[in-house]
Length: 93
Image (cartoon, rainbow, N blue to C red; front, side):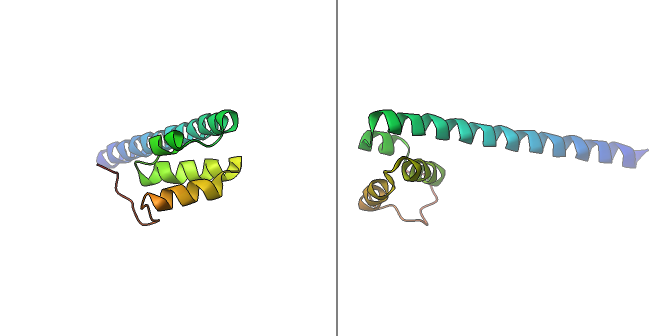
């Protein structure tokens, strides 16, 4: 009897974990599409890059979007001039 409760709880926890990860993936795709649309409409602007350069994940996202929109080298140089390196994982304060 006890093993059934434990396995049911573990299955429920696993399902919640999978749904949460699915939500994160969908959110990343939405943010990618929104940023790509902005860069394609307005072109490269440091205010757009600055708004997405606070965390490592955001910097990777804006770099990917910039590469796909044709502004990859410009964004890479700008982030390098601001002092960001690939190993800067922690958010700005």
